[in-house]
Length: 382
Image 1: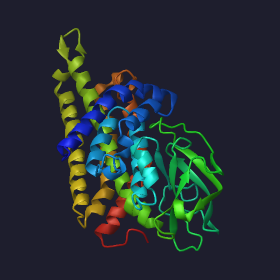
Image 2: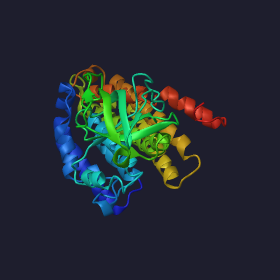
Image 3: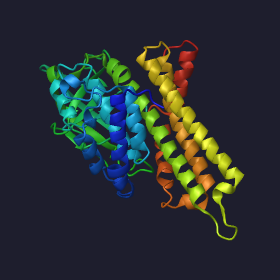
């Protein structure tokens, strides 16, 4: 399991309790109605989890990626939509931490549960190539005006802060800005209706001539947005995706175990668990989930020690966990038979949710290409 300090164990236990009570109580309804998990996010905010990565000096929990992964693992076991929203929030918070002095007030608001963040990197013109924005900021006074069509922005219209990318006015590279949900020119230009992760409200977002002041909104340096996107947001994003995939797989393992031990054949008096082929499938599910979680822990250790191979493994992490979630959820459906096809068994939702990560940028295909390039000594992009 996760190498947690005693104080972190206490926080994970609190998150587990919230997941199994508040989050679980509304998860099916959130999925059914494709609505934002208001109750779950409010509970996380009120219990200080919006400030999980915020330093204690700014009122936060002072947590690290290990704590974040452990908390997300618990959340994803009951509601992957809630976990996805929380993942994007922390990815945004980690960007604010690139300049904690400039964004001190916002970080304090996160710690107090008053600020929900998200990312807006992907664009309709570059699709899943999130690292290559096509939008171009235009210089104005001491800042810029930004027009862009952002696709699939989690918590769109709900998040207080949107960490958005664009091309710098001078064409020197990407820049990253903090956009507020009440900025003039910001609109939600679509609705969210999806196969899985139905509660995360990943709506398209249009920015039309939005004014942004460099002194208060520019994150990092103009033209060096890659440092923020790839250096601050991406590692958190990948670790979080790893934890979410594992949490989904864990939910499938537990639902399958409960079904095999609780149901049987009335005419023979035997349980489903008495069938060796079903036990073997459950064992395989357990092993694959444990392997994925062990790899996540190993990657976390590499990131913490600044291992030179850490980024390669972080890129492979999303591949590992998301494909594990898909494989384990598929095994669960096959193992539990017709009962798994209905909603009462608790497998149908994680089966759908598991498919989201494999097509979410960076996709599994992209990750394997990136990993392959690193393995043969090629630059990541080029």
